[in-house]
Amino acid sequence: MALTIPDVMLARLDPLANWVRANSLWPMPFATACCGIELMATGASKHDIARFGAEVMRFSPRQCDLMIVAGRVVMKMLPVLQRIWTQMPEPKWCISMGACASSGGVFDTYAVVQGVDRFIPVDMYVPGCPPRPEQLIQAIIDLQAKIKQTGTLQGTEFGKRTEHKGPLPMHLN
Amino acid sequence: MAHDTIIAALKAKFAELVTTEFRDNFRVVVAPARLFDVLQSLKDEHGFNMLFELTAADYLKYPKATDRFGVVYGLLNMATGVRIFVKTWLNEPDLTLPSAFPLWKGADWLEREVYDMYGILFDGHPDLRRILMPEAFTSFPLRKDYPLRGRGERHNFAVITRAES
Image 1: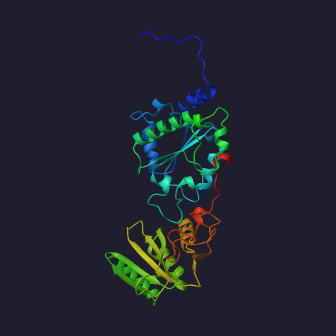
Image 2 (image 1 turned 180 degrees about the horizontal axis):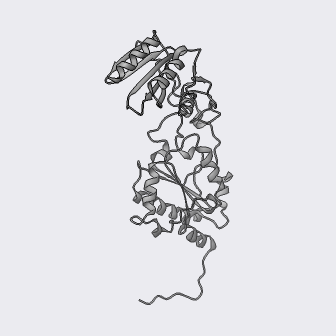
Image 3 (image 1 turned 90 degrees about the vertical axis):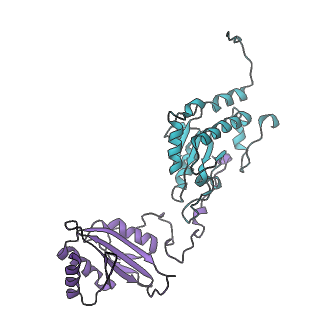
């Protein structure tokens, strides 16, 4: 099958940048509990997160653009989480993985934060205790769709977000 | 039985001791004033060279309880494998015990944990700070009059929005 590629292609820059960003998400694994084990399984060969361009786990937040909060966050850990989140460069996204990160889960006690979305912005929630790797991969695919719909080259959509409601799709802006 | 000779020797030395036995657990109940002497005697004369547990319990809502806090020391003789528990009762306002740190260095973090969770002070501890909760925490969360969901400490953080980060 012959593939014909034209010599010149014209595209708007925003969707092009979104397409690049969506397919090279570099995750920051903020793994504090058993969800972290599923996160490792997602990165390993069987489930292979590399198929979706998100295999480059970086342990320095300055090199990441996708924070995956995997596990419960206690009140002593939350300032650390917020600091790591602010250290990540724009554009950046956040997946709240599992019941504990999303809502506190069964740990409704004095020390455990009842959902990280109370304190940092979250783009995608993954249900489950812990979620299967397939669910996390689905979240990444959904996040890619979201990035492709809403992102702008300058990242101006982030500056307008002062509440938890996300930005409008590009064609509605 | 190894326990019988130990307890007999202890009772001969400390007349006011109360000892109980339940399912192979041998327990010695002692007043806070004599606690350190009993622990020292157990270590020096009976070879209990390991403090394998130091913990506390709040008996606030316990049926028929007469005292507020119970502090339990679990001792192990590593040569013979004999274990013994030493328990002492504490009531407010005097929540101070002598530190076991001079006898067993392992008491360091255990006593810090009991202080962190129950507010029991250990006199003579080299560095009695909170070990689990943040330094700025003001309550003692394992006390039974502390609510399970806290007093709002877990939500006392700044909210970061997209526009700010």
